[in-house]
Length: 229
Image (cartoon, rainbow, N blue to C red; front, side, top):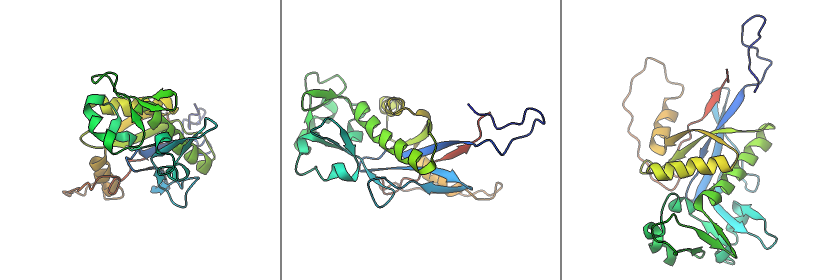
């Protein structure tokens, strides 16, 4: 860990780079990663796409590799049994909670125990929603690292306000599997309110109403640029 303090003078040393903490919207349809630079939010462009949005879709290729994003999305119609989407809806839930989804997805949800946390079967392997979400987070982490030319190990992740404790913990666990220390889980509407307040005068007081359209249409990222002491 690099500490940006000149031990001789006791002052902050600008020559030592600050640690970047990214903000991640782990969405049902699309996901996004961003950071703060010069007090402004910067979204990271997906390595597979032309914009900053990464489709929250995974495809299990014939060679055993896992493809995430725009390339994976192309297999939704041709290989639906090997292509996972909307995994966020399964986070922290049992089969009993999500069994009605079986008619609207092409991949297999295991129903061996209606009370246990749900699992997804792809070919001969069983995956949890946490493991699948971790693959999306790994892709976002890699995109951020390629963009910033440095390793990323810490993040803040937004979740729907209705997420219960099990779903929030599942999101944290997915971040850990992806190699991220999840510093905070922030409700999406709360993140929108915080984003609106960036740059306002410190003494300014306003009432702000946030309407969350859902599906990632109105989820502002809460990002932190933090000096580690």
